Image 1 (tube, helix red, strand yellow):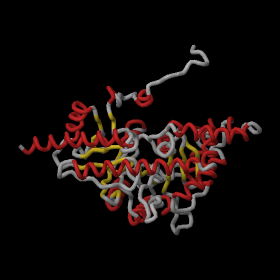
Image 2 (cartoon, rainbow, N blue to C red):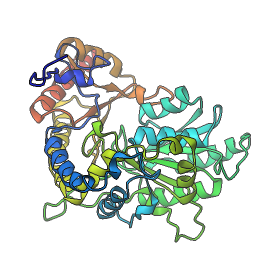
Image 3 (cartoon, rainbow, N blue to C red):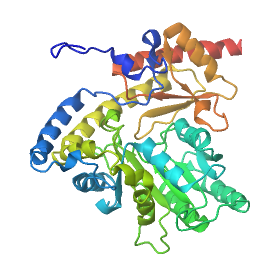
Image 4 (cartoon, one colour):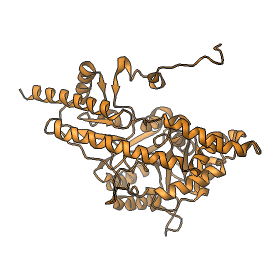
Length: 426
């Protein structure tokens, strides 16, 4: 047992090294993790001191907590989201989660059973479809996307086709026969946003086919577009804003699954689900929720104070500046220094840049070369595809590293790509 004065030391890479991503000092541009986490210490200290003054009298934060979560947290979060989204978010529509992954797993496991069909974008967040296939035994159907997001016409046809053979009996406890998982805003891995026209079309398709659309909304507030005054603009409207209770024909077909992992700290394990009443009721009436109450009562209370004090808002502004600079620097290098024939769109937010090489080019071979020659890695596009497509694409994260380390690594990838493409043409 260490003495009270003995300092506990840990190599920083050990905090994220279960998969040897930092092996031998490797620069791992595949990791979708936030930076400047040191600032979280002062945020949490100030917020904790603020909330503990109240808890010294009440102590409620140390209880299991209510099933839908700390009231102060939901109130402050609703105000925060209302400011950053383009519609009013009511605190009663929110349920506390232990992060977006837990929220996704919970919704999918409560509403669907092994062998059921679910639909996913292609490409998409690879762990998302792995949860469906491997953990829950669901059958995933891929839907292609383009620059405006998911191909809703194709989705419509696929839903029509698979609905005919579905054996799911829709009941009060299982109100949808299938679900669509998508990342409509600052998409992972492509950085794209679902256009307003597609948002409207998708909600109509979801209502007509009686499906649930679960949005992975973890990047929404990370918008890097600026107005003429140099201020960050409001991000594109969330899909949830197109499915409101005041709408004619509203059935509650959209769920927004959010998290503080990208905008503050993944170690908090704190998020939220914004959902229609019938989904919230299914969550809160489940034994899973009933047993433990709030999924993260203590931390949500501390973050309520962080939101109330404006600490999250201040932090968000700082990381927007940093990530925006990083993103633009990476994009500039790719456009100006990587070989011709390579294309990539400049995202307006999020964590990632998606790069497309000519068909037939192997990004898996490029990855091996970059690891061998430069000790730099990235994700090959095929890992983001349920069908193993996009082998000629790659994803880099611009959020984790400082700009010098980041740009040096991106230049090295480009150098290796140029040598490979020149070798293939000789």
